[in-house]
Length: 277
Image (cartoon, rainbow, N blue to C red; front, side, top):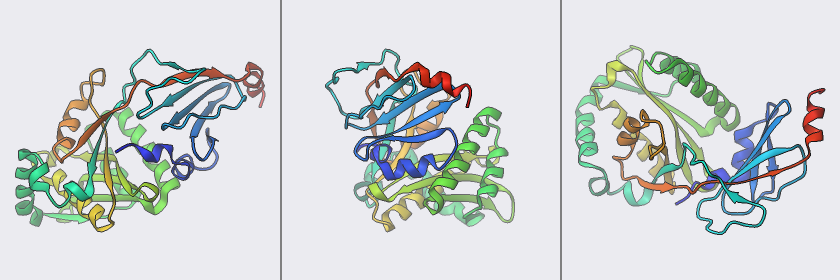
């Protein structure tokens, strides 16, 4: 399995959207994203096809390969390990029908507990603003919440109906648990974007209930894989360990990306011209 959607041109165009500071660059076979903040420009690619680099402004370029062992001419291996390098995937058709075999003992306990608890909860498809209100009610860091709320709005604009919001509430109370996933039809895959749990729901099995619904939906759509997002790895922030332990329970296969390849390209003259635009 691989993060195929990050190297899919159609997905990237949706993800970038129109306008703003991000631009589609590269080719259909090796697409990338250029970010421009005034005269400061950077460029990123992902996948195993070598990017075709244009002239343009002077900028650092990173290329995240998945399984590329050879370093092509003009590139070098980055010296600093990226914070985000471990990803987790589930083969939907293999694991979905055999959860007793692949899910951890703790996940199966929570599955059984959820079957009893679910009568206390209502599963809803909230609006974007209702989901965001639920995220704001968590006890997470303000900057963390602001970053993910901004990214959720961007995904809603670019991906439209491919974004799926699910949440749980008790009776007619506030949303206490939520999960946002995004379908990528080009790759027959769905990825985990963000989830939240209020302190009032941490002792429940509601989070597992939302994962079960995601599995069931993926199987009904005959998707190939679920991407559970990033996981803690040596060098990652310590507070990633909690959500990594939770997500790892569901038959997840880990994939560590190698260090990115890097290079510089472009002319400084274009960066200076951006100061006067």
